[in-house]
Length: 258
Image (cartoon, rainbow, N blue to C red; front, side):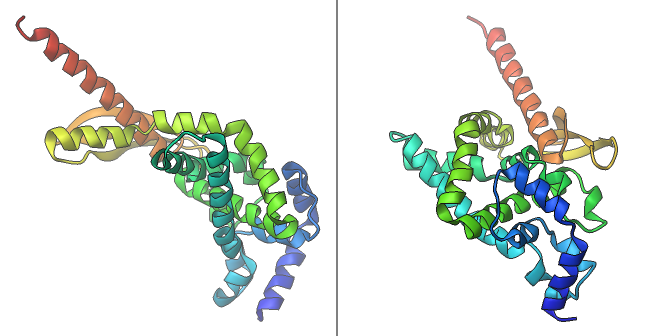
């Protein structure tokens, strides 16, 4: 089977109704709808209809690569304009919060892309971090599709609308909730070791799992947390650990003789 045949088979098997729903949700009338079709097509789907060497031509991986750069540039431009007095290092941290996997997966869900992707049978039941990575990659591919179809102005208009609406909250949340990083810095300073995280429970259906994790230092459980992904549960466990360490520090201070 040639690459063109694989693409033709792909087109025949992907209904236009799904593309119309996606375009409507995104608010973009694509001149070339095949770009959107490609952006929504995960490698796992093509693995089921094409030879291995043909996958790159018909999946969204190359668009994902391009979309990552387009997103990074527009996010940097947005931050440069929005925060004229903020130094470079802080702007970099802001951009990291805006382009991280969780943010992109959140935006993908806002547009309903989680229900519109073309996935292989195995990936349709993926959850947690795996699902977030798939959604984030697809969102980057969609950005590239918009860029190729509507140019940089179209991509900028699309992303600026999201950034104007969500950037401040995402940046604020990202700065406040990096509990794992804060715990690691504190423990490395005090104990010269790195906290480890252990999964203690997984519950719920495959498409809506809840994970329970523990934050452990020198064999002692300092905190436990739950979340819709292992990463979210780790953050909550780290937060609980920080709360405990802060309370223990206050207790020791109160016990010191005056």
